[in-house]
Length: 113
Length: 114
Image 1 (cartoon, chains in turn red, cyan):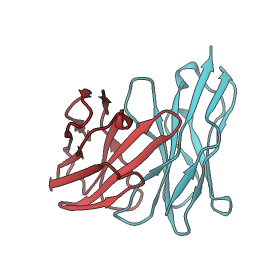
Image 2 (cartoon, rainbow over the protein chains, first blue to last red):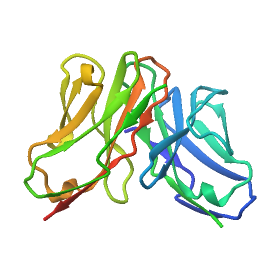
Image 3 (tube, chains in turn brown, red):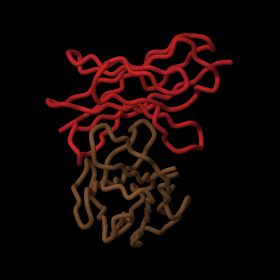
C-alpha cells in the first residue's frame, strides 16, 4: 500500500514565523506535489517536483518555497507566514508513466494567527 | 497550461436518484483524466481514471465516467446514489507525459438526502 505521510495533522503558527511542512512517501515515486485546499476553490497546486532538487512552480507559488533533497521527502516552506496562508495543505506523489494517479497524504490544517 | 472546470458546486439528491457531475478541461494535447473523492474527514482517493482505450471507464462503488474528446469533457455518473456517496468530488487532468503537473477542479459537494 502506498503511504504518503505528512508530519503534522494540525499546526498553529504566528504571523511572520517560518513554517516547515514535511511530507514523506514510501513508494519510490519520482513526482511529488504540494496543494492547498480551500472551500469553493478546490485543490490549487503550489509546487511540483519531478526529481531530487528539481521543482516547478504551480499556480500559486507566491509566499512559498520547497525543498527536495531526498527522493522520498518533499518539504513546503512558508518563509514568513501570513493569515491568508491559513488553509489545508495536501501532499501527493505519483510515479512516472502514463496515467499514474496521485496518492495523497491526510493533510495538514495550518492556522496562522 | 491545463485547467479544469466543474460547474456544479453543490448538488443535492435523494437516495436512488441518478447522478451526473460535469467536468470540462482545457488542454491542447493528450491528457490523462481522473476523478477523486473525499469523504468527510478522509483523504482524497481515486474513483477512476482515463488514459487510453475505451472512453467509458468504470470505477469503484458503481461510478463511471465518459471521456468525450470533442467536448473536452469527462463527466462522472452513477445510476443510483446512496447516502454513503455524500462527499466532495474532484476532477483532475494532467498532460500525458511522464512528469507533469496534475491540475484539479474546484470540486463538487454532493449531499444525499436519506
